[in-house]
Length: 45
Image 1 (cartoon, rainbow, N blue to C red):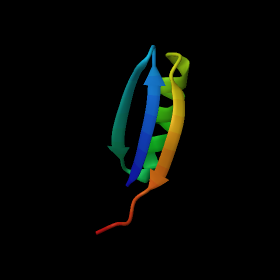
Image 2: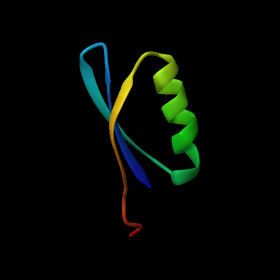
Image 3: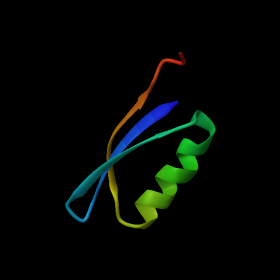
Image 4: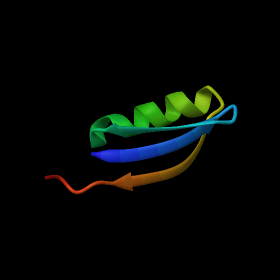
């Protein structure tokens, strides 16, 4: 799992996604104008 944090139009949000979906989601957010300011791989429990 990966935690990503972004800012879109002054609104900060976070989302936790499986590793295989993160790249697609990051590209989607960036195409909307979001700035990804943090991503962190979480330990699998």
